[in-house]
Length: 121
Image (cartoon, rainbow, N blue to C red):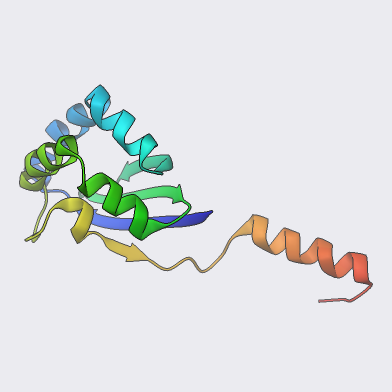
């Protein structure tokens, strides 16, 4: 499973409305995301509007393509675009993907494998 973390910047004067919109995402959008392979999806927003998103997927390109093939996604992205700073493409295409530099589970798995072979880190 691929872990994807991304960043966007919400306009400060639109943060409250953005939060309200995400408290009740359209049921069809929720269903489309799940069917397209977006799992364990969360959004986090800092007080200045920096938005961090996280989700897991088998294949990011395939998950994005599946969403792009839905009418509901086009409508949602068009409405969400107005909430972001310096974004000239739909939000789901314009996010800055962050590089993972630490994963506890991966390191614990590697440590367990070393322990079973008698190797030391």
